[in-house]
Image 1: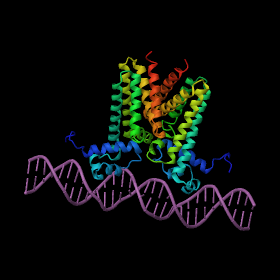
Image 2: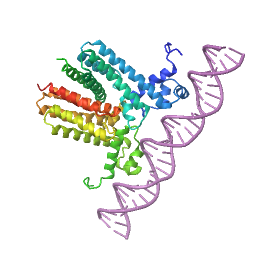
Image 3: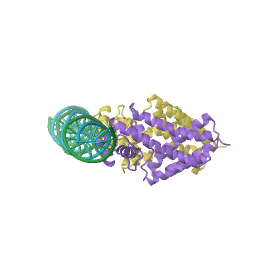
Length: 195
Length: 195
DNA sequence: GGGCGACTAGAACGAACGCTCTATCCAATG
DNA sequence: CATTGGATAGAGCGTTCGTTCTAGTCGCCC
């Protein structure tokens, strides 16, 4: 039962592998059998750990990926005191991580969200909540820096949208520049609220 | 041979249908047989018009969708003289179109781009060129409004990234607000270059 | 020691995938 | 009229998909 054992449980291995695969290949493009193989688990184990099948695996994987991204944001925001510099640091961290992954590990939820748009899948709900969580952590930072609640909310939404879009642009162009540029422009935008 | 006949050719029907389906379901999630059926063509006709198979259909479809989006941008940018208002108008037009489609017709290339990231598919190239074309039309507008070349380029990249990301956010939340907010913030950003 | 839950192993299901193939239709051309 | 070639029609290829199933192995706790 211990979640804190040295070796990750089968379920944890499945979630981690699934998160990375979905991030890279999308929900539709990732097969259950591929997840099982790369997680060093058998197909039976996957269905044992996730009776809900592929969708249940994806939900857990998206939550996991979303949390990772959340902590990356939180860490960068805490590192820099000035909100403009903090958001620019977020963009820089994303750019570095993206380059180091060979431009394939982008936003963990965008692909899955887009692929399941027409459906009323649970996946949609998870993506929505995950995005909302990211906005919250940015908005929180802005408020703590003296932003009005409504300003903070609107700017935070824009910051997340911009980072998301810039990440895609950076991936397609295999270049850090779109993310760096977005970071600089977001910083400039945020400073207009400070003077 | 005439591309200008009143009735769209089989090839044109296939391209239009494929563009919409890929936009909604992604590249992997859209089957050749589904394209054929919805385009009122047979499977044989699809492979006759596109000997390159699914990837060739997708390339033509993405180019088509990219051009549509291009004209939407161009039209909004021409309608408003002030660059800040023009970009905000782009966001507003996207928001309206998105709502009218039931939140499913988003960016025509994002999904396909993300799904084929690992590969060296022709699809990647088309997505990259399409994104670049959108940035160019925004940069052109900014330059014509007195922006320095380097400023225009960086702001244009950010504008497209932000619109892209805000569109995804709007789709996931089934709300115009993320796009409206992005439009307002982009307008604010652009005005910082004018004073 | 007995029971039980976690996990392994792999066969098999129906359905859908991208794609190839043959055959037929029909309008235009010689 | 005969021929040609684009378009249509659909059967069928091999493969993979998500899922279910049975059977067996292992370690842990009452």
